[in-house]
Picture 1 (tube, rainbow, N blue to C red):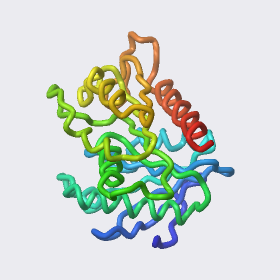
Picture 2 (cartoon, rainbow, N blue to C red):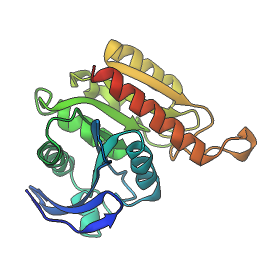
Picture 3 (cartoon, one colour):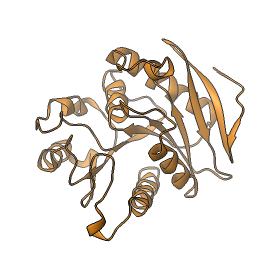
Length: 234
């Protein structure tokens, strides 16, 4: 359950999410006429208020997608080291349950930036079956391996995820060698869709010489996500 929150911005409310490890903060951004709901987890080094996540949430809101962002316990308590995986996964499940309670009836999607997306997929994989309310997972830069150490062990659990998955990946992402990501999505078959952003790094920054801006990339990400939500929710 969440305590009543205060207004944070237009259409956005701050909540107190009750997770097994203790209460954590959350932000619900609801457009006037939401069509979908995306539970968006943050990456390892930045919380739910990071400008990237805030911008993604606002861009999705203009496309009829509500978002629930939330803190993992270690950042809520201002600790530098991420919580153990089971604590992170418990927090993911609590956020999913709260999202479904807050906006019942909307097609529910989940995922997040980097570690947040991976922990979301692990929470689903380790649950034994997909939560009935979750329609699919979206990864904003899936962290397949440590920097400059190409491997695919961090993606092996995805075989146990019985949901459609959308991978948004940059060609310069040091945490996801593009050839390995392609091989991973091919292995997952029809459950996986890969969208590649040319010249983007793990933070989805692009170099000036491309003639594109980071803002344009974020709009691209939001368009792809909204289109995919519509496709999956049919």
